[in-house]
Image 1 (cartoon, rainbow, N blue to C red):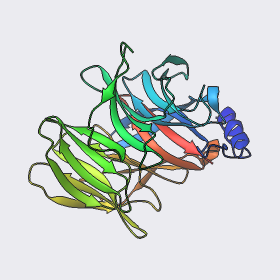
Image 2 (image 1 turned 30 degrees about the horizontal axis):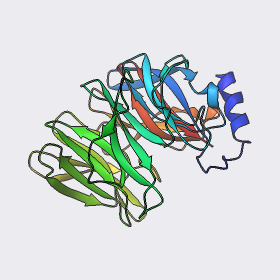
Image 3 (image 1 turned 45 degrees about the vertical axis):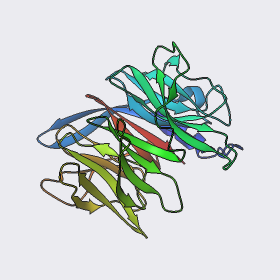
Amino acid sequence: MKLLFIIFSTLSLTPYLVSQLPITNIVAFDYTIANNKIEVTNPTFLSSFNTDGYNNQPYFTNSDELLITSSYKAKGKTDIFLLNTAGNIIKRITATEQSEYSPVLNTDGTISVVREELGNASPTLQYLWRYPADRSNFGKRTLEKYANIGYYCWLPNQKVALFLVGERNKLIIVDIESGEETFISYNIGRCLRYDQNGGLLYVQKLGSAWTLRRQDLTDDISQYITSMPKNTEDFELLPNGNIISSDGGKLKYLDPNNSSEWSTIKDLTTLGIKNISRIARSGKKIAIVVSN
């Protein structure tokens, strides 16, 4: 723990990169659930190879490996890397002139990402791409129609939820096969999660009031769950139905079946962690993104 405190105290003195990619790092913890109580232990700093760069959007492929977006090897842009939970780089997945973000391992063995591309009508276009995990080819776009994809979440039955960037960020669901589009909401947060019970969870932003909502994909009903901690739009789902989020340097959890109030799992400010954003989990690990 002392080592982590030293690392984060040093990071707090480091300026942002010229490229405007913020300095972000990734820390992993073991987690356990017993009697509906969550505990996190054994912090491991995963991005020591790039502490003054951008390391973000962790996605566990299994309990021991995770995909991340990182500016390592390419300052000012990002590529996708595969790490193990000791923080060792196993494989560089992309090495393109463009930046890629938000990696997800798909059931067909491909890795989907949001990829930036230069366009005539806009400085930067953002498409959903799929790359083969074995890097056997250069990949391809998944949805040609949408050039303003910020984030996404795969759903059953060949559907995908898309966060579309605009004057008002918009959430839609698209059927990959038919192209049918269903509008869900405006003014949403970047985090989208499918809860295995036919629901899509997202954050609704109305002024300073940010609320967690669940869109039932079978009966088209949107349900209020709770208010989010101030200025927090990231969360993760646990196998028992609880939800993890953050408030500054504190990890929080919610049991939506029994309460609408967030409880504190652990205050990580003692480790020098001030701001937690994205959260990912596997069967036994939690990874968090931290910034100054």
